[in-house]
Image 1 (cartoon, rainbow, N blue to C red):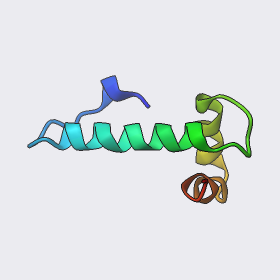
Image 2 (image 1 turned 135 degrees about the horizontal axis):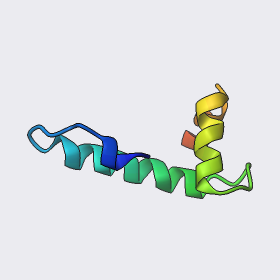
Image 3 (image 1 turned 90 degrees about the vertical axis):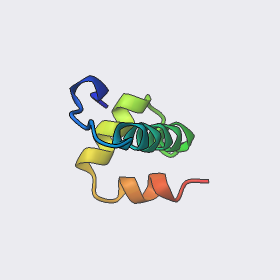
Length: 59
């Protein structure tokens, strides 16, 4: 997720965004309708309008 290039440096915001990234990665790992790696799931979520909703609603 390009954390090294992130320029967030204010008042604990970096820790908050690290937590958000961690949650996003966990949701992508948990989603099973697309049987590929996390990187492929990230790319699919960026290209497909419906896939992020499917990731958020995965059980």
